[in-house]
Image (cartoon, rainbow, N blue to C red; front, side):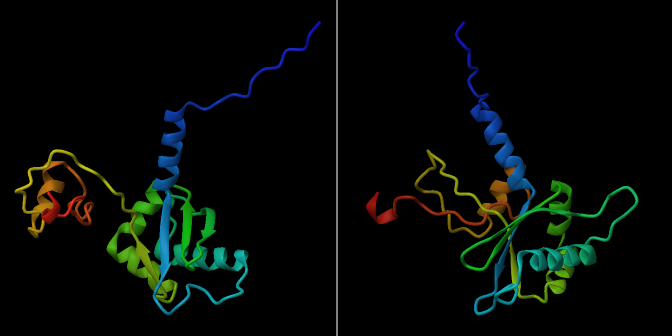
Length: 164
């Protein structure tokens, strides 16, 4: 009798996209301030994690119904920045609070910038007479589309006006 082999299980593309999205929602990006490094060169991975854990513990004290924030993964970037995957989106949302973020950055000795994740979005069929330089336009678009405040960072034309 011939042996049958079962093909490896493949995750549908939509499930993969949802999984990536869930991971990104649990991540924060820390960039070093120009001319500084977040931690001294040569610091071990374990020491980096313990310093970040201490900063998290300082900024987000554990409560009885909310266990303490934990780090699931840490990736060091070439520019010296860090992508930190935390245990939950809830922890990331806590760190987005201005006071909590300030305490967290102070615990890291203010050597970093807390960068919000941004996305490039291409929108078709925008009237060419729309004044995208108008200061309140981004906030108006956020409001009309039920987006968070400051969710839109910038807007520009793909094709410069003089080439239309």
